[in-house]
Length: 170
View 1 (cartoon, rainbow, N blue to C red):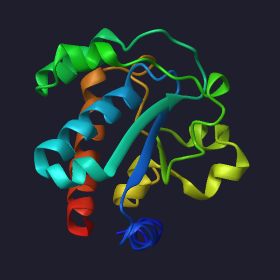
View 2 (view 1 turned 180 degrees about the vertical axis):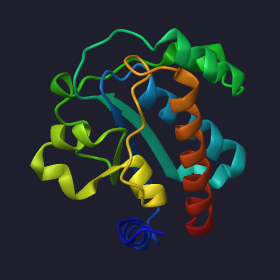
View 3 (view 1 turned 120 degrees about the vertical axis):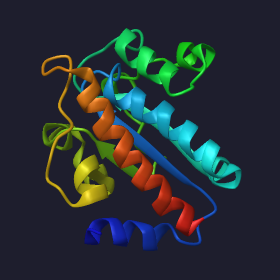
C-alpha cells in the first residue's frame, strides 16, 4: 500500500465519519459513476460504514446538466435504481467553490485534474489509481478515449479495494 494511503487511513482511524469527493472533467461519466457505485458498495458491505461515509463528486473542466446515458446504463447493471441515478446533479467546481471545504479526501481520475485543484486543498487530493494501488495512472476519459467499459472496470476494481480498506478501519 502506498504511504499516502497509509497516512490517510491512519488519519481517519478513530474519526466518526469521513467525506470523499470523486473528481473528473465534467462530472457526468467517471466521477458520478464512482460516487453512486461507491455509495452502493459500502451500503451493501456494511450499513454502519454507509452511515459514516459521505460521498460526493464534481467536475473541474466542464459544466453539464445530467449524468451520461453510458454511466446510467452501467449503474443500472450494478443494481442501482433509476431513481437514485435521476437524483444525481452534476457539480462544476467554479459553480461550487466550497465543494472541497468539508471533504477529507479528494480522488481525481487524471493527473490533469490534480492541477485543477486549488492549492489550499492539494494535501487531500490524490490520483485515484495511485491512492489505491500506488500506480501513477489515469482512468481514461471514455468520452475522448473509448470504450466506456474499460474506465468503468478500472473504477469499480479500485472502489472494491477501497471499500475493503475502509471496512478494516470502521
